[in-house]
Each structure stands twice: as structure tokens, then as C-alpha cells.
Length: 316
Ligand code: FAD
Image 1 (spheres, rainbow, N blue to C red):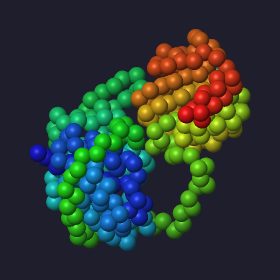
Image 2 (image 1 turned 60 degrees about the vertical axis):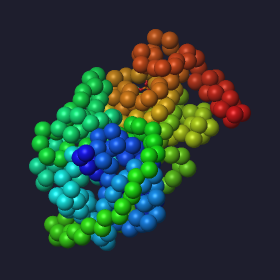
Image 3 (image 1 turned 180 degrees about the vertical axis):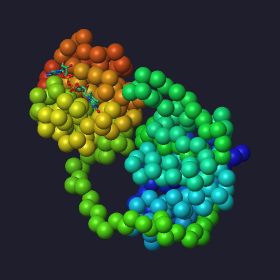
């Protein structure tokens, strides 16, 4: 069975949930192995093995985090050369897309971005994408060599399946070219205490229908331990930061549950959320286009519906 590599998302060994998601998908394609760049593998190893990693390739070099993506590309290219995997899976994000694209060129392989599902087939891997603002769902495969796939966070619920988790240290000489751009300062953004929008399991979004008052949206989101998103109309009005915008020109989210509050369902908004597993909308206009794609719709005023929903969740 062909090997499938997963680039581990972590901070000093503390894993992000996306690593377990990618390992779950990798098991559908072939024999899953993890690639761990940096320090802290001892912390991560039991969890990686729990989600099926047979091997864990480790490249420990001080340059990760000090420079832009160059060192990660050098390290992954070395592991790919050593293992000739069918595919390498990474979590969709700005860095991952650049890493995947550079690797596809360097290793003469294929590139598929923003996948929402991955399975075996084709040239080793078949990836499902939602394209053209969500109007088409396509399946693609690379045509030669290894295929590098970025997968949207929360595309799958992680499922445990014990792997061997055998540590495989890899020696890599990071090139000077990879260290061309150094990071001189990095400030963490102020935390809202809510989950990250891109990776949250539940997202509650507000639109123009909030009239600028997001307090009921936020209260419901907090009762659900959800991230808060916003439509572009709400962002353009200055009611919510652009980093929270969901849609074609904002974040693409694919949570287990997406709740749209006072959002009409324009095509550009759908492009960012319609791959969500379950979609709920609250809108006082029963003709609103958002109701065409929802699993559950509530016709009503969000300022009346959301407090009741929040109270019901809190009682549980
Ligand atoms: P509206 O369309 O005004 O809808 C508001 C809804 O709230 C209505 O359906 C109304 O019935 C309902 N409502 C009002 N009051 C209440 C109440 N009290 N309770 C319940 N419901 C209520 N949009 C995005 O969201 N993301 C993008 O990334 C994005 N990118 C774009 C890119 C381009 C190139 C263009 C041209 C547009 C883009 N847009 C994007 C804008 C998009 O076309 C819509 O204008 C926008 O999504 C509308 O936001 P909205 O649904 O909040 O507002």
C-alpha cells in the first residue's frame, strides 16, 4: 500500500485538531505517516499514533518558524524524495498553499488546493473540491508523481485508529536560499477566547440583519463554543473585523455546523460556507435565498430566535 504523508500542524508539539483530521483522511488513501517539523515530537507522538500514523518523520531544525516557508519546503522535499508517497496532505492555509505549490514544482508532482474530501483512486489520490463560488463539485487527481493536497479544516470528523508511531529522524541540510526571508517579529493577535474561525467545528455568523448589534450572535456562539463569522455587508459596515468575513473574498469554512443569522445567502457568501456539514439559517424573510441550501431554516427575527436558542442550549 502506498504511503501517504500528513504535514503535522502544531505549536511546540501541541497538536491542532487538523492533524487528526488529515490522518483520518490519509487512511482512506494508503498507509498514513506524519511529518513533524520542529521541536516537541515527544508530546505529539502518542496522539499521532492514536490517529493512525505508522511512521513519524521528524526534522528538527532551528530554522522552522524563523524564516518564511523555505525551510519547511526543503524538509518536506527531502522526506518526499526518501519515501515517494502517493500524496502529501496539509491543512489549507496561506503557508500550506505556498508550501504545497513549491513542492509540486520541485518534486514534479500535482497540486490540489482547498479539498473537502480525499479518497483513494486516480493516480493514488482523488480529491473533492467545491469550485466556481461553490457552483460545481469536482473530483481531481494528479497525473504524475506525488500529489500535494491542501484540505480545508473540519472537512472530516477525526476517528482514532491506532498506528505504530515509529519515529524516523530525517537529517536535512536547509539551504541558504530557503532562509532568504527572515521573520523579525511576530505578535499573536488578541484572543477573543473563541475558537479559530477557519478550524472551528461550529460557526455562527451574522449579517446585515443584525443591524450592527452582534451581541445576540456572540451570546449564542458562546453557548455553542462556536467561532463568530460575518457577511461582507456586516464587515463593510464596520460592524465586525475583516478577519471574520466568510465568503469568496473572506475565509472559506467547512464546519460541522454553520448558523447564518440575518444573512440573505448571496452567492459570494455561499462560496465560503456551503461545504459545511449542516447549515441552519435564521432570517425573517421566508423568500431569502439562504433557505435554498439550508438543512434547517427558522423564519423569524434573530433578536427573538437567538436568545431563546441560547437559553435552551444553556439549560442542557
Ligand atoms: P443582505 O443581503 O442585505 O441580507 C440581510 C438579510 O438579513 C436579509 O435576507 C434580511 O431578510 C435579513 N434580516 C434583516 N433583519 C433581520 C432580523 N432582524 N432577523 C433575521 N433576519 C433579518 N459577501 C460575503 O458575505 N462574503 C464575501 O466574501 C463576499 N465577497 C464578495 C465579492 C464580490 C466580488 C462581490 C461583488 C460581493 C461579495 N460579497 C460577499 C457580497 C455579497 O454579494 C452580498 O452583498 C453580501 O453577502 C450580503 O450580506 P448580507 O447577507 O449580510 O446582507
